[in-house]
Image (cartoon, rainbow, N blue to C red; front, side, top):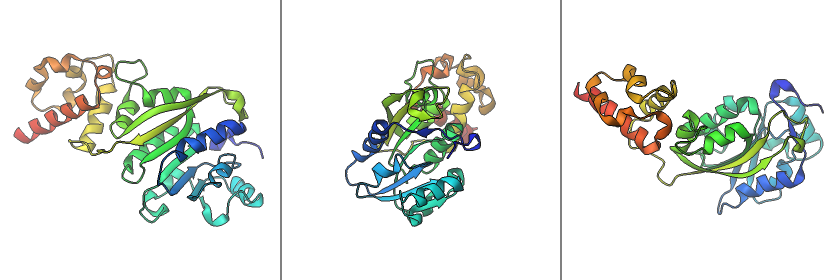
Length: 259
């Protein structure tokens, strides 16, 4: 079974790392429903199957599905043959919450994160393998060079940590980049005290020209430009945490209401 570039496949072959990924999620008490994304040849699946879980896997490649069933790694009724990005997450476990895990295809890893955020009420925790560059951006703190849009949007709802860094030789074929496994745990209070949609627009607009001050980048969103005279808007986006972006969102929302 050769990896297919069209699916962004790099098969994890290091058993120790596979077990470590599975155990990274399995530390959570009381969980039951687990969705693995992109199981491939099932190196992670077999460790997940050893535990008392309601496990399902979503796989877009028919050849991989055939491999999993032929080798009896997982029952056919636990497999969803579909592109994860097209999957209706509310129907996977009948509207119940579930945990996400996987050695994610690097070509859609950011999209997987955004889909998770859009269904945050269903996903209390996620453990996954990402390209190290992406993983570093996700968990980066304000003020760092890698801090950006995906950092703010993920950290608005989840706290993140790196579990382990992984070199190319842990895969077949080896990718041209290093990888990292990260854990994201949903915050207890994951509802923002602002308009979610406007919040995302503010974050993306702010980082569209990250070297410029907020008073310059946010002009298109502001009707009353006088609010930009506040010294607060002389900062650059990488200096601000989630709370500050929530504050900006509310300022813009309120000035529109009062206009």
